[in-house]
Length: 452
Ligand SMILES: Nc1ncnc2c1ncn2[C@@H]1O[C@H](COP(=O)(O)OP(=O)(O)O)[C@@H](O)[C@H]1O
Ligand SMILES: [Mg+2]
Image 1 (cartoon, protein in one colour):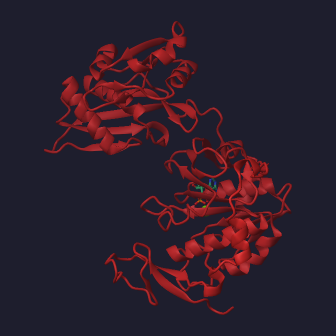
Image 2: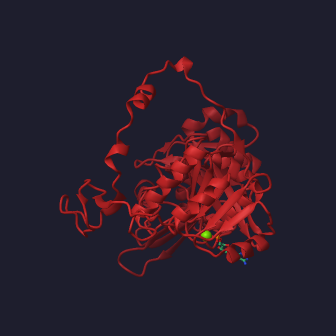
Image 3: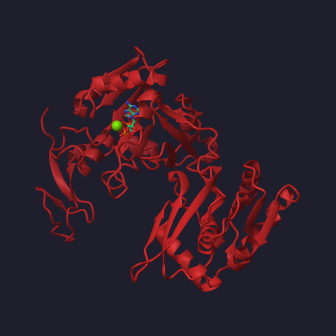
């Protein structure tokens, strides 16, 4: 194969150079030059007939479409996240930290799909023997599941065309001959993904692509893959915890509101349908410093326990550490508690942890963080049957949050008897009156009074 002409283009300003340079001479940024194939001039120009056809406006009422056929992946939680199953001819990126279970999940999906379809598992990181070993451990076997150990995507292309579903494990380990840069570089990742997209769209082959997350938390190279993909899924969760959350961050065929909860075991990765009590400890309510909040993750409500620990600081500047809640958010909330409720926290080291490795990104957890902090400061447990939710402003006011009725409903289902919630949400929750004790609060100080 003759080598394609390539050039190095700055990702910041578009400056093109024949050689790689550490610093872009045009914009002065470092390490922004990335290798690209120079397309021959004639292929860039669309033919007149084609452009005339495709650029004619069509009335909305006359636009035809087909219902998207979907295939089940065999794992219900994954189907939910995908928006109801796998769409044929789509590109699905599965991202996550190393060791979180991407290969395991896709091996299981491949084995399930292989019952009715021809599936190719391109393993660029592990040998076919290693994949086979994993299949044996997971108890999977199929004659329709083909393994290929190849890093050159140009050579593997022929094998793709025979299959209906292809798994690429991983995009960082494969390379195309068109570029001279190393596998895993931004240029290679982008070029390989673009090549796979062309194959997927022209031949109707479905691709699952594994992408590793870099230290910065974005897929290597930074977000270059997301716009090419139809669906982008991220695996989240602490490596030491058995529970992982699969979240869609982009989905052309479904909502990005859905999440899947998975449990990693020696026999494989399984969807968890009873996820409600995963993020609560057995001894909750016995020790001071913990509060439970109903958290809306994706389209589901889960009860999450927030634990805090305070210790007298032995240095001038107290330490603040947070797992699962944004550190800056926690520092702001500590300041609210000090200033608006008069609790002395300035000399305390404060540690905070959301149970089970879950990440609480939504502001409705604010009030529960404050409840946990106040409980730690007063050395008084909150009690097993109390749940708290609400957003907190800098003046100490408690703001309304969305899905209040759904949250209260979940608290009731999980056996909580008392819910502290924003007063502005009371109207939506009137239907629960008599079934569960609702304590509306407008200010943080009211919550402290209600709790202690
Ligand atoms: N023999 C085994 N028994 C039980 N669990 C295993 C075994 N081998 C690997 N694992 C688990 O599988 C996980 C690796 O999953 P894998 O799908 O290879 O991750 P990824 O592809 O995301 O890097 C590890 O975290 C490990 O806990
Ligand atoms: Mg892997």
